[in-house]
Image (tube, rainbow, N blue to C red; front, side, top):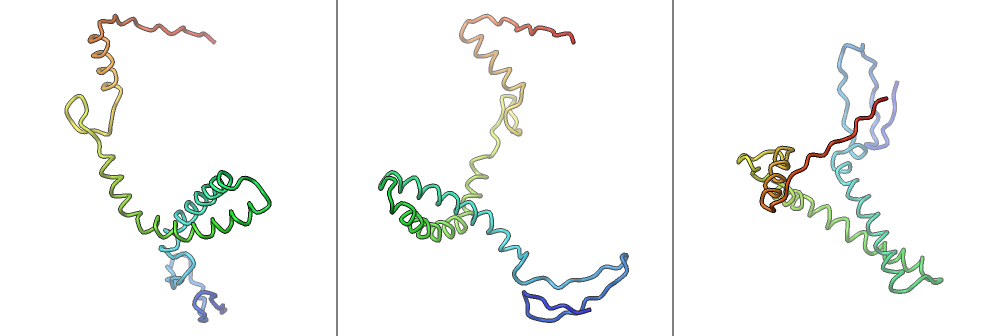
Length: 146
């Protein structure tokens, strides 16, 4: 059996092998490529954000009139091709900055952990209560029998 690939333009032979044997496939050149898949979230995100932002700004600047949709689409089709490459190219820098800003801080017990835990919050609560001179009254929750 033969089929032609729409991606490579070449005809390839399909070999039916037993289920236990592994079949090596030729990678597709466009569909399913990792670079296209990595671009898709940025394409969609910048498209939606620029669509909404240009609509809001057009409404604020021009109001809703007969020319609104034409001017909005013109603005969106001007902004999106600029926003996508800027967002896609700056993504590694933004990811690196995010990792630097989100490093865990040292907790009250002195070691770096995965952030605040319940013991840290309770300790801070007790310290603040003592410092303010307030008395701690335990909260008694009602017991509901079913």
